[in-house]
Image (cartoon, one colour):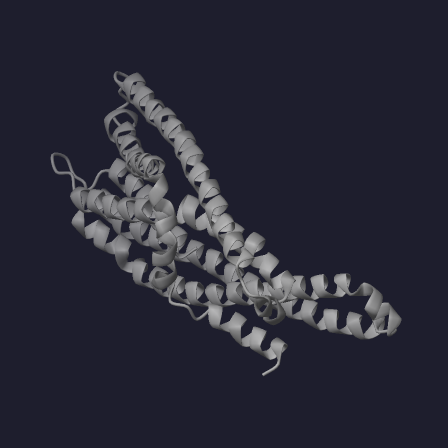
Length: 318
C-alpha cells in the first residue's frame, strides 16, 4: 500500500472514532484544573438558572401592574430585573475568564505532550507521515479542541439544566399549555439529529482535507528546487488544484447543513410560538370575572420560555 493511500485511509478512519471514547481520553486533561473548572461550572449553572427568571418578571409586570394600571411596586420589579441582569453579566465575565484560561492550559499541555512523543518517534514514522500533516495535528486540530474544553463540557451540562428548569417552570405554571409547547420538540430533535450527523461528517472531511493541503505545501515548498529542476511546476499545480478543490467541496457541504439547520430551527420555533398563541390565546379569552383560566402575563412568559427552550437544544447539537 502506498504512503498516499495509507494516509487517506488513516485520515478517513479518524471520523469513525466513537465520540465518547475520544471524550473519555480527553477529559483527563481537565483533571489538573478542577479548581478553575468547578467554579466555572457553578457560574454556568447560575447563569442559566437566573435566565429562567426573566419571563417571570415579564409575567408579573403584565399581570400585577400593566393590566391593572398599578404603578406601585413597578420600581421594585424593574430594579430586581436589572439586578438579575447585572448579576448574570458578572457571572458571564468570570465564567469566560475561567473557561478560556483552562482551555489555554489544556492546549498547552496537549501540544507539549504531542511534541514530546514526536521527539521519541523512530525515523520511519516521519517517512510514513508527511510533516505538514503532523503540523496540522499540533496546530489546527489542537485549536479545534479548545472549544470542547472552554464550552463543550460546561455548556452541555448548563444547557441540560436549563432545559430541565424551563420545562419544570412551565409545568408548574400550566400543564396543558406546556404539553402544547412541547409538541414541536420531536421535530426539533429530528432536525438536530440530521444536522449533527451531516455536520460531523462534513467537519471530518474539512479536517482531513486541510491536513492534506498542509502536507502537500510542506513537501513541495521544501522540494521547490527539485520541482523546478524537473520542470514539474504544471504537474504540481494540477495536483494542488485537485486537493484544493476537495477542500472547497468539503467546506461547501458543511455550509449546506448550517444553512438548512438554523433557519429550520427558527421555523420550528415559530410553529411552537404559533401553537402557544393559538391555544393560550383561546384560554386567555375564556377568563371571566372571578375565574381566571390563563393570564395574559403567563401567556407572554410561555412565549419567552419557548424561545429559551429551543436555544439550548440547538446549542447542544452545534
